[in-house]
Length: 128
Image (tube, rainbow, N blue to C red; front, side, top):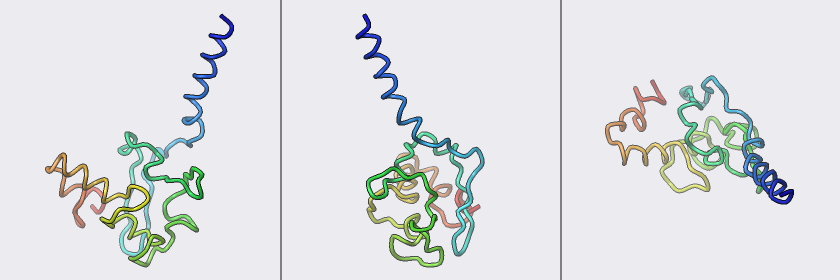
């Protein structure tokens, strides 16, 4: 009986550990300040996506830093290369991690009625 109880406790702890490691998502939308427009990013709308989808590992470790943090995608003026925030958000090329336009394009394939909202440059959910 004690073995079962100990094993159950270990399993519960092991399953809860990933949730404890991740910080709570912000309640309010975050501002992505680039070189041209500010984009409001609502975490609540993206809650169904695993955190590691966007907050990809850095040097083999989980990172919950903002995309534009120093040392990450911190080139806010450039439009080329993985240091450019604009590039990693908008490129349609395959990256090491899922990017905004890539994910939005997949959603639009399933729900074409959302094309203007999720992939348009102007008057979209990203660029109102």
